[in-house]
Length: 132
Image 1: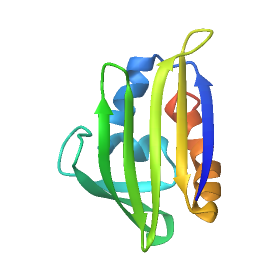
Image 2 (image 1 turned 45 degrees about the vertical axis):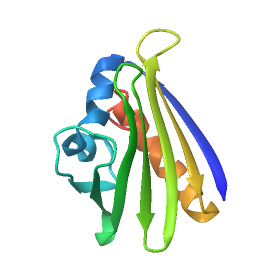
Image 3 (image 1 turned 60 degrees about the horizontal axis):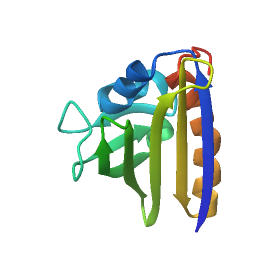
Image 4 (image 1 turned 135 degrees about the vertical axis):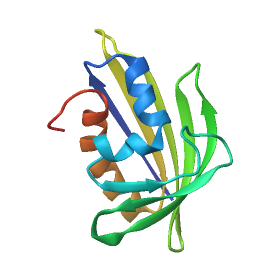
């Protein structure tokens, strides 16, 4: 197993950024690697699972494991075939205004490395940079 940590600061308000995370139907609007999300609820909730549809027909099953809306943090487990990853996300006020969002990914090295690279672009868009 391997871990990676990504932290991105951006201009958008933390509450706005949190809403983009909390509503799975918004994920494709800021994460270019996501084309659609199948999820039964309008907001993330512990114990509820779904499927992320990615580029080239990739499908990733997931289960939300923790959500703390007041603290703006959530965790989930994802499964790609036999491979598993655990992801922790936080959203907080940035050091100079705006937002800081952080991601910690644990899983097989090849997946962790690929996801950390893709997530940097997505997280920049999440916090308000339109060009990633």
